[in-house]
Image (spheres, rainbow, N blue to C red):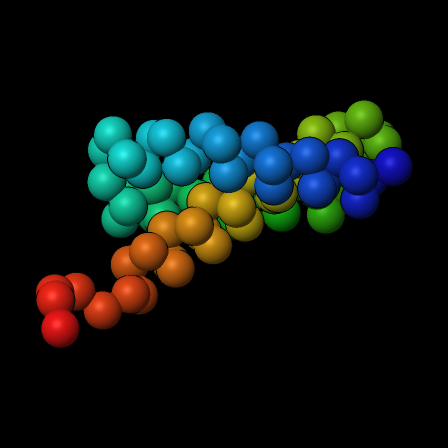
Length: 81
């Protein structure tokens, strides 16, 4: 169950953070995604109940999706041939 929710977070995070990175830029979204992953990962480790754990894992999936999308785009070489 928790892994399915995590994968749903990756899906939703890709859709939402991809659109936000087009509007506000890749670097700010990358920074926010790192902060989201750090906060939600730490919170998931110390969550008092399963529903909170699942919510934080969903947010971890969103953060990982934002990190992956922004890193891939920023690491591509710029310019023409």
